[in-house]
Length: 381
Ligand SMILES: *Cc1c(COP(=O)(O)O)cnc(C)c1O
Image 1 (spheres, protein in one colour):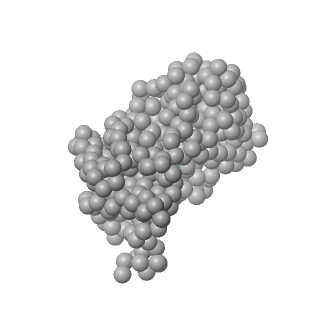
Image 2 (image 1 turned 60 degrees about the horizontal axis):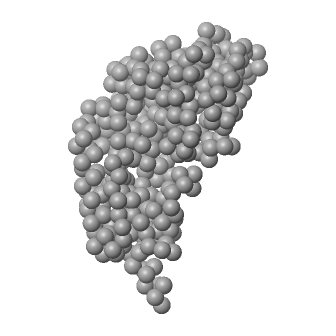
Image 3 (image 1 turned 90 degrees about the vertical axis):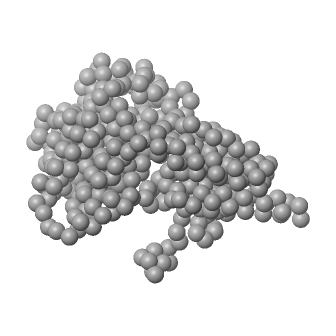
């Protein structure tokens, strides 16, 4: 029996996204091996962490980098660092920011955008969150002497008409405000690891380690400005400050840096092709068995460099119900369902092969066919 079976936990084939709910991504063999090696010895923790962070900076072509316990931890540490910039004595006061000259964080209004409010996490630092309408003019006007930073999320993929990072960042740069980009799931291409900071000029960009980088699920990465990264490090474990709660273990540090190296040095075209082959196989099988329309897209759900397959379910069937059905199978299959804010038709199932192991594409195709054929059968009765 494996560890999941002992706990009565059902295996899920991930045909959607490296969602946290599904346990993130699957690590490569080399990454797991690095974690096992790290687990075998005690070391000088800070030396290891510094070496890992330095290598992460090199691999991501940034001035500096900090490896933490997730993109969420990255948001908190970044917000904290921006409030303590030039005032290191502030660090020991967090989360009491009442005496700070700069303690406001601007975010794009989550009441207007229906995206998951990850920006809320910046508030755990004691920062006052200022919510602004998704309009460049209002965002610029909101910047004042109390502003410590502005947190951006590449939201234009979710909602039409929302200003993109490419549009907002140059305008914000004129004000001199610090800019943090939450790019947790904005990979691949690997070049996004330096795109937001080096190309667009954001001060910090944040990525999940457990999503597309395929590191341990409990890791994350902050890249960008050297001084801000130094402050993130000082706020984090093992120092007894706000970020003490975000402790990366030696195993996670070793696993993360191995995964990052594999991610950055891998052949992206080849990876794309391998995923595309799996998707084409699914499309072919589903079309043959059920006659439904399929469509291959050359872009991922968030505009990323990934192939994506759309399956158009017949009338009276929804992606949501299809997912409920395929999740009930053993092993379960998670097919992609667009959240309502994407404004997509309810009958579109999306399939992403990023975390599909060889041969699993057959099980995905069978699961979807099973659903369609059963529904057709039911409606005939
Ligand atoms: C997943 C995600 C996060 C949270 O990342 P963790 O690594 O799970 O902490 C934050 N922001 C966005 C946009 C995400 O997609």
